[in-house]
Image (cartoon, rainbow, N blue to C red; front, side, top):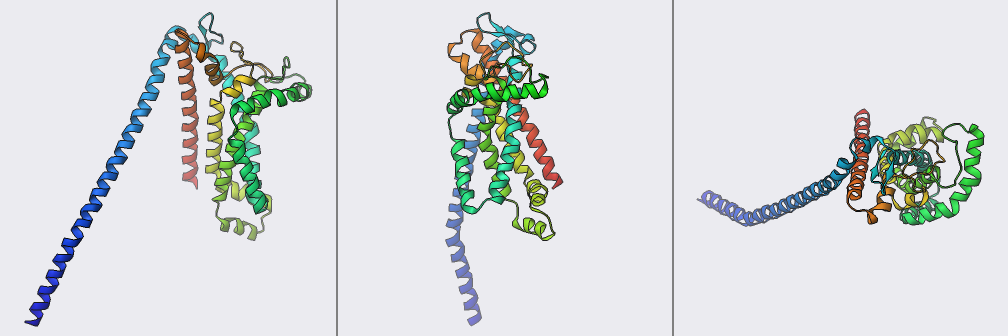
Length: 327
């Protein structure tokens, strides 16, 4: 009998615990259901926004394709007054200025990130990191004015004559010297994307395990070997991401390039000294006064720029994934 009573009491206690825990499970299931519903609503809204965004750009660009035809990609004449829309010179100006910017920003930015993370004292590291963050939030129009007022005279009277004399006027350093133009635009653009390259590269270098660094020093490696053969290869995925972000900003920069490049839209660049324009600067300069077919042509420029940025990001993602496989 005592055993039967204990068994009965245990069964009753188990039933009570099941009854008491069932409301908790139902509340948890209810909370998960609401969370999943909210997440699906957010995903649906994001998908709708992306579809509407790209759809509107494509629809807006259709008149530009119809008016320009195949010459839209092969012609270098962009003239709103005569309704001539050739994008080849604009695409070339975009790629040239971005290339010059990367030539400057990538080596300088990665070197600065290595110095801040591994060579500076902690207090100086915090100071220079804050300085980089401040430089990243400077408006682009400030960089444009700074480029025209401060850097352009130096480029006109010092840098471009020096490059022409050293190369003997060989391409791409030949032609008239204006001060403003593609070379100045690329240099200012490099300064603009430099904070992005430095900040993201430094964050990637900060994630390198300290044991890896100490192990390299323990094996007798010099500081240069540790930085360039251990730390930098270990952080190469993050550094590549920094370069990709900088490239995206360089391709899409508008106000500063409209101020610096000279606004020449009908000249295919043959020299780094040439005046020119980019896809983004042309959109920013002409959109407010555009009517009729001009609006469609500018929409086509927006679509081309979007496709170029997408291709850059896609290639960078593939490279990062390949690097992840080899790690």
